[in-house]
Structure formats: structure tokens, C-alpha cells
Image 1 (cartoon, rainbow, N blue to C red):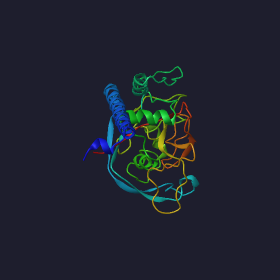
Image 2: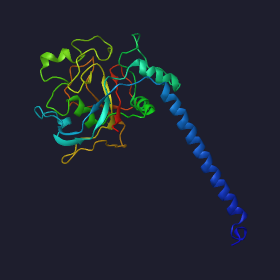
Image 3: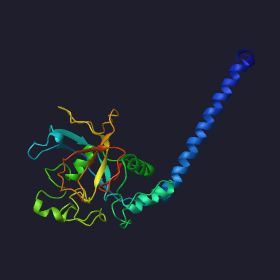
Image 4: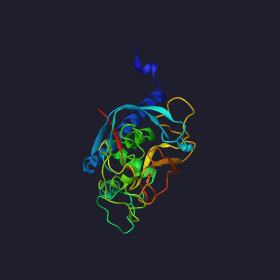
Length: 264
């Protein structure tokens, strides 16, 4: 078959043009991936704790009066790993400088290993994704805060008389975030799941479903309201099932985050 007789000059031009575009796109993606890989090598390490899979009853297990955390429903969480500590200024500053992003306000206090604050949801998401990680789902966060879905009101204890051993909250703190890991960890070995700073969740802020299992990672893009969990130095010690909705581009001196990664 004579190829030239069956392919017009116009078709040949379109074919060559398409191949060039595909080559250029592949080159750009390759360069971007290489650039991100080089940045990732310079990021500060994050210490993770492996979390086993499990099934638990998510929501207000205590007295079932928190309408925002009802109905109580069964959720199965797959194995994953969560950052042992809340993200620090030191970790975030390194990321921001490498990405030419503005540094978050420290309000005149120390940076270093203090829990980073004044970070919105998009910035928290970008930080985690730069490492190849992500923000936790709401189900993952509550499962870990409750040390594997136990009927645990605060992360590490059910006894409010012990809360100062586990959490920075309004009754034992000053007006800024503290260094991470200064209080006792919960049974999974994670610190500051209750108090110090609120933590951004990956999910949007839907109501719980009336029946069946809750979506593990719901993406309801019709609203910009995201979820924060855990309470902070400026609030009372929030219970593990307490949900708070806030706009995704909000920055606050009481809001930080931690990352999770998939298990291999």
C-alpha cells in the first residue's frame, strides 16, 4: 500500500502536530515530576505511626445528644499511617520557602517545633501533597483520636480530671499554639489529638447519612465548608466526636493540621 496516496498533507500536518503536543505535554509532566521530586528531597521528615484497620461506631457514642454527630453509624477504616505530631512551623517553613510561598504568621512567638497555625485548607492540602501524602478523612481522624474507635471522650482518657495530662486547652494554656508532643500521647502513640490546635480534615462538611456506612472521603463540592477537629488552646477540651465546620480559605491562630499516608 502506498502510504502517501492515502494520507493528505493536511492529515499529515494534523498527525505531526498532535504527536508534537503529546511529546511536549509528556516533557512538561516529566519536568514537573522531576522538579517536585527534587523539592521533596529537601523537605523536613515527618514521623508517622502505623494505624491498623478496624470498624467502629462513629459519632456521639456518649449520650447521643450532639445532633451534628448523629446518627451513630458503623465505619470501616483501612490501614494507613498518621503523623505522630501536628505539623510544625519548622516543617511548614521549609516547604513554603522551597515553593516560594508566604510564611504563615507566628504572631510574634517562636516558630521551630510549635504547631503551625494561620494555614488555610488549601495550604494544608498542598503541604501534605508535596510529600506525597494527604489530609485525613473525618472517619480516619476520629478513629485515631479514639485510639482505634474506643468509647474514648478525649484522646487518651475518659476522665476529665486527667485532661491536663493529654491536652492544651483554654484552662491550662496561653494565647498561642504550643510545641508539639509536650503532653501524653493516646494509646496509638499520637500527640495533641485533643487540644493545642484544631486540625484540618480532607472532607467537606456533609451531615451524617441516616443509614448505612458513612462515606470515608466525601467530596461535596457544592459547599466550601470544611471540617476541623480536636479543639485548641483557645477552646475547652473538645470531645473526640465533636465536628466543627469552617470556610476552606480561613486562616486562624487556632487552626493547624497533620498529614496521613497510605500503607504499603
